[in-house]
Length: 424
Image 1 (cartoon, helix red, strand yellow):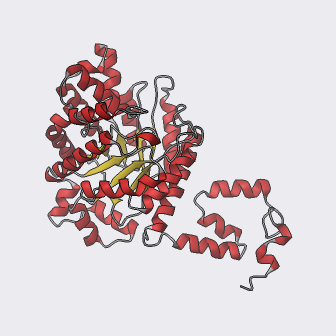
Image 2: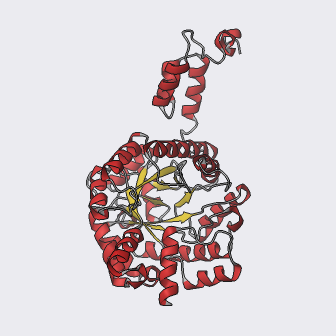
Image 3: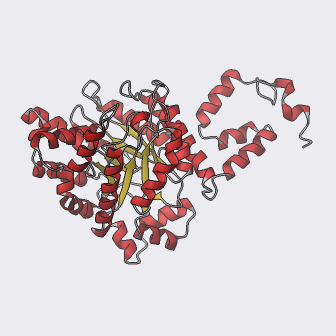
């Protein structure tokens, strides 16, 4: 049985016990939320070295880091370094978006190396190999697509982005309205091209029940993709995005009914003023399914710094109910991230997630900040290092720009805690 099926039958699985302990939440309460689909525990039965985590209501906001090859950079050794970096800097999950090299070999090796939940986007490999084999993805059949999903599930993928909510109806809505940036989801653009060429409904939507059969067999969590997410502020919350969201709400219900865990992916690029509305709308339409957001990016003009634009939006999104943030690196919109970019993206997202958790009152979230305040007041540098999100960076800066005195090199003898001797 899957996690959601066990939960409905009153069974607290070993994975649920681990998550409950990590989150300091009552096991029975956790089981009920899993049964209702408001928490998911991505854990494919074939992912043997996995330490499970929970994503959803009342839990800490989680973050995901993307890695993967491209046609220009396809060395598996580079991806090993990246996944080690992802785990070292404490991302909660990792997604393999590989499109270059031997994708099967890369995926299997990364799953074997990963102790955290592992996700992917099946259509990427489909499109790459269909183009090589048949000249174009549009020639693929639904059965061929399902065979890829089956193979990847067998390999141990814990959660899959499936763009099943993008239908002919939502494309028509988009055509009538128009967009400044068009369709910016890679998976969304690929499946839209298939639909337009073949003049048929999205096969992921048409054969969604068959996809759910595969997912149930391996307990793969459905990450229902937003193929029409806005790619610039001007396209935020438009007809196409909202039409797809309504379909995603339907697919959440179908997933749960089939005994499959499901979460929903969201925008994208949004003005700050639209973030809270988008989160609350998704939670309403999708019956509190965990919400997985890319950013949101709150401005379009900061290439090279989009980990910051993403963190700004992510903190706001988490504070009003987003459960899961997909990191964005400094190379977003520019190129494939390297190891340092991966670290920068993870740290920015971790900061955003923690800030959001404080705002929404996640139990224990503010405690670390209170302990840090005490350590700073006492000029306890060792304790500050222990409490900070990145002790390595802390040590590096202290070594390069520290001081022989108790104070930092910014204030020196004018340190506020020295001047007033902690009288207040």
